[in-house]
Image (cartoon, rainbow, N blue to C red; front, side):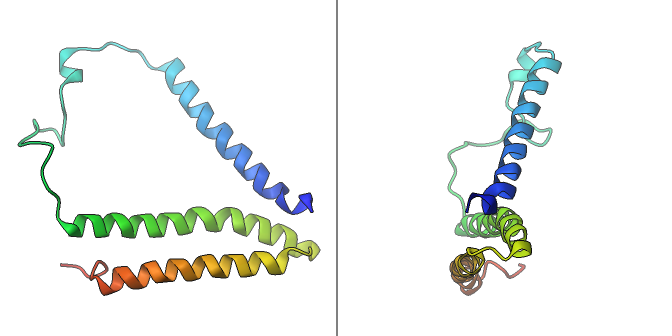
Length: 125
């Protein structure tokens, strides 16, 4: 039973080790010399204009939802594929459950795609 999750645990461990390693290495390598210019707000090479508390268009939030739907799908499909393909070679007992579980997940994502499509977020202006 636990053998089906070994590829996922390896992937999770490598991802956590990689993330922690990058944070530690960046703190060890960088020099910290704060100045007034470095602490000033910066936006595309220009000083910021206007207030940071402006109202955003609904289109902005639809694009953000679209990104989250695509991103979540990708993030959850990779470890599922590692587990499903790892257990499919041995024909484990949980293979059918994994397939149904992912089909339910993809169905929920399809509802999100349909919502975004109906709201016009997939159309270029």
